[in-house]
Every structure is written in structure tokens, then in C-alpha cells.
Image (cartoon, rainbow, N blue to C red; front, side):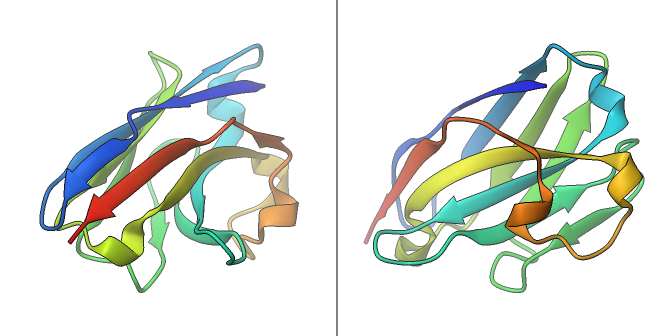
Length: 125
């Protein structure tokens, strides 16, 4: 599956952004979808994951209560709504797909087979 992320930009602290990731090439509902981010000089980290049917989600502690992941299987798109943004949320955000055969557990970045190109989110203080 090919992934194309969009929606990044510059926002002030406390503001909101919504990222989108459009998928093509394979059956979208065969994949659990995740958002990761990588800040300068830091390792890539998991932000959120959503199950293939939207019936379960997982969030990193740092974003829980502020970010919301969702998907529209009819549009082959996964979203990340980011509210109450903080300067420490500044990073390149990547969407990623993992086959449902891998199960709903252990969401390491290496377990995601397909990656989008990344979109930059900058939060100013």
C-alpha cells in the first residue's frame, strides 16, 4: 500500500492541526494504521494506532487526551486530529500501515511495513 501524508504546517502553541494520510494500491481495511513522529535529533516514536475497522485505538501517553486518530475506510484515509499543541510536538509526522495479520499488539516502528513520506509540524511558543 502507498501512503501520502499531508496537513502539516506552522501553528502556535495551543492551536490545532489535522493530518491526513491517503492510501492507495491495496485494500485499506486490511491494515492497522499508525502515526509516528520524529523530532530533530530524536528517535522515531509512536503517536497513535487505529485498528483496521476503527474499533480500537492506542495513544502514546504524551498525546493522550489531546490527539485523536480516526479513519474512513470508504475514503482510504486515516486522520490525526491534534489539539492543544505544544512546542514539544514539533516533529515530522509519518503515517504507516501494518497488516492485520500482525495482530493488535507491540506497535514498534519496525513492525509497520509501509510508510508515507512525512509531513512537518512546527509548533511555536
